[in-house]
Image (cartoon, rainbow, N blue to C red):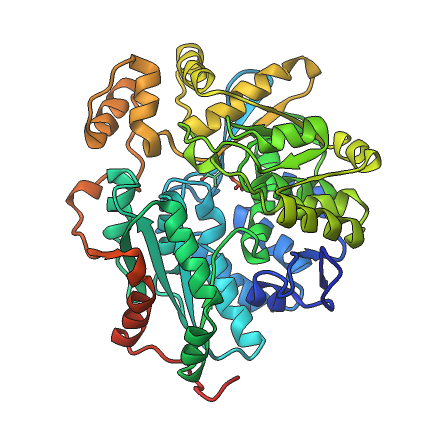
Length: 502
Ligand SMILES: *Cc1c(COP(=O)(O)O)cnc(C)c1O
């Protein structure tokens, strides 16, 4: 299986090259040249999550050996990382609505499923492509991605990670989750500024040729952990299959029954993995793309025009507060039948003017696959409240966007599996507010109270957090980001295995 650029501007590469490169150097994203069919017996039979993962990876990461894949899978999915051997859990909300809980990993967010394995795939990919440089992963985070990346990359072979977050711009819980991270290769730095400042600072470091050359001479390269890397997208395809298989085994759907999936969406990574599962033979009719008030995708699917020229809102589903959905490019490539010329012209328009408009034929192709809409903050809260009243089940604010939207499409006579992307404990105060109206002004008290009200145990990622020692306490100005990175690298005595490597 080879990987090609959505913009037709790069020769085909192997899976390990695509994972090592992250994105196409000249712009564009790597996509698989074709998608193989996964026989339904693989996921509706008795196979475990890890076994299904093994088969999916063998089909897609064809230049990895069975042994490399097995080691990566065993390191990522085990009883020290996930609190369920099946990784993903199915819960029935009503006869037609099923929830797939994706948040049983170490940080209570769905990003763990991919970020637990991606570092192992990256280490492997580096060895296979002869890259002996030491990789420093730079991350700017508004809270959640930082912790999931830290947990995934901690102690990874030949890789270090530095996370920047806005000082006083993340919740107390998010800050503690990050600053208590152990591991011999992790650094967490608070920056005086907001998230955009951190993001801009990281982008400037990536673009700084002087720093890059200086690091190269000591055998070090920068890289990122973001969701445009095939090594992060590919693992997400697996749970669509295993969730379907689990729903069949528990009798919620019949084997072969066509279902819809509804996905609370930001960067379009999770829902795109669902689309790829559909291409690989999973019986899916529609993918329902659920947006919050930052409804750039809902507007795009309704009008054919994607425009980032709009106000940005901070909402109670912050992990979906995004105006550039990077992975949409891969979907549009598929919807045009692989027309990289059209994709290139749209993304040139986006870079130049902040918007682009697609043609009628592409819109019709999209309408075959996608339903979409958006949900405001008040409906998020009322949905959490009514689902708890009706089913005694607590939703987090992101999942509530999906549940609310899927209810609007409930007349379709199809069962819908809704992706639950975060544990409610991750957003305890908002969730408790939806249930009780008023909330204590302390996140730890909210967590305890939520557990008492719902009768559910506190997620492993958050219980005990209060007593964990803080291991990272750097606080810097924006201007100090560059020197901070260099001093972290210097203090750790980092260097590649072969400092003469080019
Ligand atoms: C990242 C995230 C999303 C959005 O997922 P995408 O793959 O970016 O579309 C939704 N919910 C939560 C809780 C997240 O952390």
